[in-house]
Image 1 (cartoon, rainbow, N blue to C red):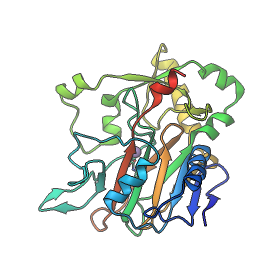
Image 2: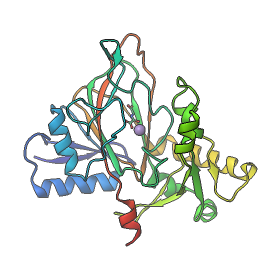
Image 3: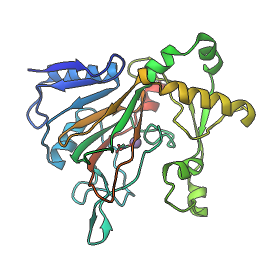
Image 4: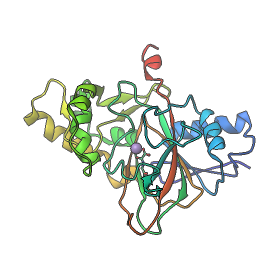
Length: 284
Ligand code: OGA
Ligand code: MN
């Protein structure tokens, strides 16, 4: 029988009594979907799904976004992105290092994905945890004066600027990448198109610029918001076990990967991504 159990007071729901490879009735699915909207992340433990079943389960939440240019897509199912420190015939099978600063996925796109579903296949005994933060809760807790000050602000997201924060091991962006990676701006306060609730979306650690503000004015404000957003009362650190699935709502949650000893231990995760549907909602 389906059970929905809060993970902490402010974030997450653990879904129990469900095998994602079996038929999930529409009424159960509606409750699961609503819990996702309400609490920003879902956790399902002890699941055993093939890549095809992973894709199928993801589709119930929305259309899949396929990273067509990734080197780390699953060979048979490009809808799946592999995060792994393992190599096959000397070649990395997945992205070994990503998401180590607080972020939401694809924030540098004009239409970021609405969510991602991560499935743990192999996990290290220590480290390799993932932090999640509820950005509705962070917004709600802001002092009124700050809410007013940021109400109409936009943050400029620069993929070029964030590159060394996300990938300290990679060379600086090439001239071609710089030309391709145009800056985008997003509201600091994101109005979620399905719930209508406000979420504070400012990423973490990267000293983003605020549209129309000098660096002198914008940087302290961004830093304040980034630190405010990830206080312990809004966040949860997930310690993975093989068979865990976490689905996050990328419109109102941020997340962050942590370090592990990748020389000694293996970490293999499969990820699917749910395509953006923000512009459709913006028209409503
Ligand atoms: C991601 C991501 C975190 C992790 O898949 O988008 O940030 O802990 N992953 O692997
Ligand atoms: Mn991520």
